Length: 159
Image (cartoon, rainbow, N blue to C red; front, side, top):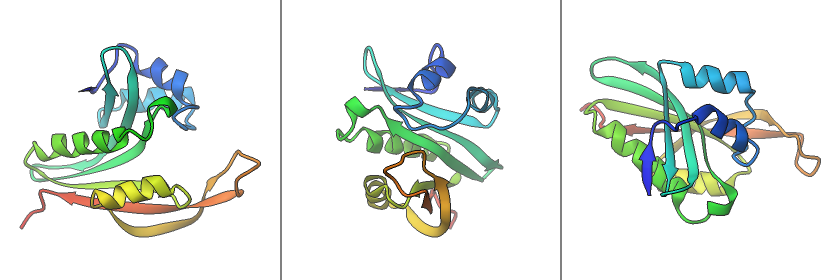
């Protein structure tokens, strides 16, 4: 497995897989994100296939401290339950730690996404807040709204 920050056509890959990855951004929003200077994305691939992606951005940076927000992390359905989401998160942390800066990473998960919540907690992310009725569901089989749980983790904390 390899990691890369760009694909030959990142925009079209995300657009073509956005339903499988459960990304509800418009094509314009995807393009805007990819063109931001603060955008930082990681793609997991083998020799032939992109298997998953982390889409994020830097919220704040100075000489010693940075804040990073994971906007979306997902693995394509046919590659799930193989530990790839964990690999992507661990790669992000490795890359951020290597800068020597103190980092705070933020992310959120739907309160009903028990697999994601369990993974984040195993990796040391701490829930610090909840947004009631934050997500709107498109599915007729799901509740109309879902709560979001907010998580954070510190890396290279300043002592």
